[in-house]
Length: 165
Image 1 (cartoon, rainbow, N blue to C red):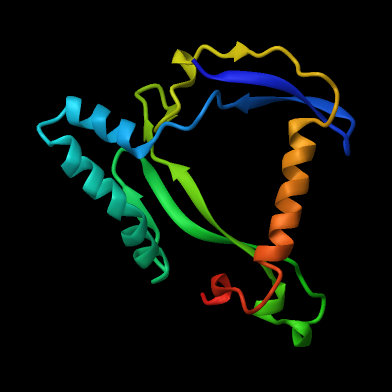
Image 2: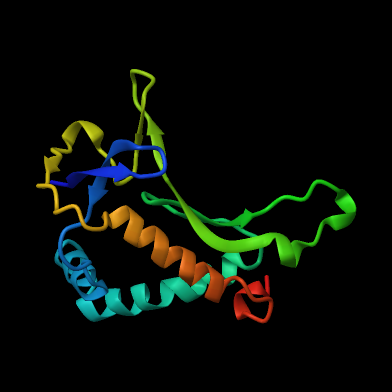
């Protein structure tokens, strides 16, 4: 059962429901153990494959491909950029603010014409509301400030290895 919380957006002065992950993330080792239990592959073999998947995906995506994992979905690079009004001012390196990996869940068409997406069975999810936290700094504001600072240090310099596309 997933959790949600009311979050106040200070810029727009409205409340939104936001999905909240509870506790620590599930580790690769736990996923490998769960997969080994439902298959004939050993836990160590599953961990070895999962440990190599990021590098293989990076290689393929950096070749300009999207990566499709059956039953899961698609992964590809997307750019956060700022535009220029005049074509003569166009400069890829200066305009790219961030490179992200976008995930698009696999979807399948149902007999009634609707679609279901991998990892999201909306009709089977029971959402639980978490109690609000004291009004100090909302999680959204703290995360946004941290990401803004990270973006400036990680993506704001052309000598970053991430500029080598």
